Length: 320
Image (tube, rainbow, N blue to C red; front, side, top):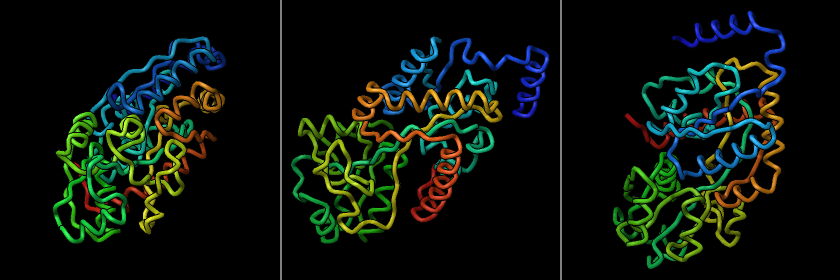
């Protein structure tokens, strides 16, 4: 069923029912789709949000992992769901901003097929290194890379990391190799063992290894130092401030979801983001909670789509 007929059928069904159908939202279980695997930072946040929303609403809120194709499988599923507020997406910068530029074709439109709900938060990537590597900071890394072109390798287990390696190459004018991984676990194992020397990765998988001194943090990619590791410099502090690229999480509903339902979810999500439980989870995955209105997310997403289009064009990173 196309999105047009899906929404028409839903509207007719609701029109034939009582006019107060939306007043009691939610009056049945709500499902949050995570377009990545269990254990990811997106999954961790979604499960904490689900528990908190369930307590607020007095209804079961479940999490359904639908990984694959850079988040496109899960996003497509939500795009095709009824716009009634009972199927939501915990989206990220990948499927909801980068994918239109990275993929030649998508089975969903991240703008037309979704109703923005709320921006959950943002977090940096971390430039991490094998604990025994000789360059001790980014200045030494760049100097070594220039003297030994092509000898340094950087692991990347996601698209954002791939783009960061390319940005580093351009901003620092160095020649380094990118080693692609399908999952962060394999990449981290290789980094710790010394099979690769450096990697860009999200805070969630990196922080425990940094704390255990299994790897060392050289820099974070946000404009300001991160709360999880205040002693770690930013990329900008090394003069590499031409581009800003962060990871973000946001909640979306299927397109044309009624505004009163969006308002209800947004209001509760903002309340939950201030709770101690979500603050603890945010610290665990290195996220700075944001919140705000659905319009705030809409504007932010549009700017991120534009940014990713420019970055993909600049770096040449694409996915077939």
